[in-house]
Amino acid sequence: MSKGKNIAGWVLAVVLGAVFIMAGAGKFSGGAAEMFAGWGYPAWFAVFIGVSEVLGGIGLLIPRITRFAIMGLSLIMLGAAYTHATNGEAMEVARPLGFLAALWLLMWLRCLPGRVRA
Image (cartoon, helix red, strand yellow):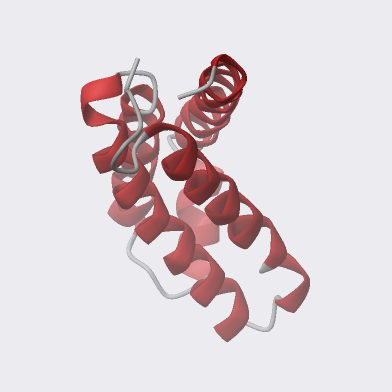
């Protein structure tokens, strides 16, 4: 792997890791449970997604488990896009799809066969 791709992969991993850790931590508030309830999900689901995002964000920073973190966070982003799309929030669909694209870019930079994992 070229030095530039390695650096880009680390920068993207750190940025995405921080974003998912902060987003996940934000779901531990009562407001998140109310928001999830408005979409038809039980209150505990907000905490589950929050914990999953925090752990996924940390996983992005650990090279041996980065690919698993990307897969898990990708599922969460697909679910978020589906939730927004089916609840009449079409303008909100772009955000999780943008994060999904960034996760897949990270997969390409850091995890595909033939690439050295740092």
